[in-house]
Image (cartoon, rainbow, N blue to C red; front, side, top):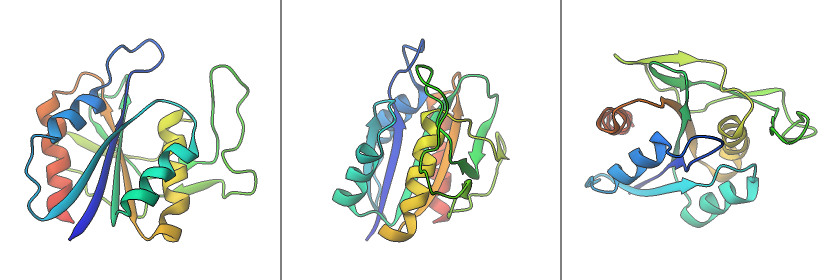
Length: 169
């Protein structure tokens, strides 16, 4: 059976709620007949070990990540993570000292109504997770995609988008 890790994030900075955490919670009520699905809400922190622990334990065939975008109006299908992390408490620095400048996602999701493809996931924890997951995709044998969800998105619209992505796998 195909194994899929779907993750979002908890609250961060001045946002008391995170739409991706709410989507992950709503997905727990879905019956995934054709897939074995692991749903995870990560803390918003720069920790490669936190992300890779889930991969090592669950051994997914696919990883679908979601992050909240405070200003987006449409779901953003992110296609590129950059080797840069920007922690508000520190200066910007590379995620991997000898890593590639940018990595493209290994799972190409088609846009649909209400979504768009973008190539700029920023330099905060969403980008950090993208770069971490994608730089390890070949090593652990999974394909990866990431989506920025608008902060004001209806949870049901986020769930439907993820279910559409799953139907394409």
